[in-house]
View (cartoon, rainbow, N blue to C red):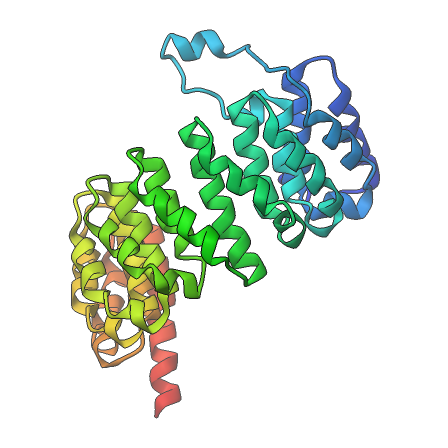
Length: 341
């Protein structure tokens, strides 16, 4: 209901907000998640739910109704935002924008929770608050030493997201994040390299740390490196060949990351238009869609020469989403041609 209510009235928000005090933790978590789905629109109709969400940050309850099914392997573990009111509240506050700026201190206090899932969610939530969350950057940096790999990964993500949101980056923090690339846990290595890519000049200064991840044995890390290199400006574009090599990686996540990165690498990326076009024959419809969009976003002679191929895909591909993407890409390419004449 929340996801379909783009402009909720005050009574709807109040009704959902009332469930934040329900005796069942699963209901409290669901209510907080519903308010989060409404995002900033929930605060335009009523901001009285924010204090109650802040209170939930210290809620230690958890809905265990699906635990048996998870242990038995019948269903995957339910995400923490649907099991734990504290996690759901943190996620919701992150979607409220400036209206929840004052909640940043409460989220920072919750970083000391004994529950690692709560620490993860609150760390990510601070990143969602931008400038307000950046005031507690030192608390997030401290989590780089947390015993839980997932918390460390969340801290890396948050530091990168805050640098991107505030358009400022710290040499000291960038160095600490770069050190995490050496970690034995792939979630930490991948998130660390992805975070570096959001740190502007600091990303360029640590280009070697990023490029070494192109050869990581774990696909997630290689995929994050593809995205990170796009944040390194013109110098990063010099590694278009390395990204193009990963277009043919055996891991689909890496293919998708590489093909998404290629058009962001300027003319050096466009030089690999034919390699990108080879993915139009990939077995995965998602990869084919990404390849079509990449070619449509490229600029240069190499990409223009592929217009007939994109038009053929728009007519012949077996998947609707691929044909639709190809039609849009072809229209964009034709418009660029017309504008150039």
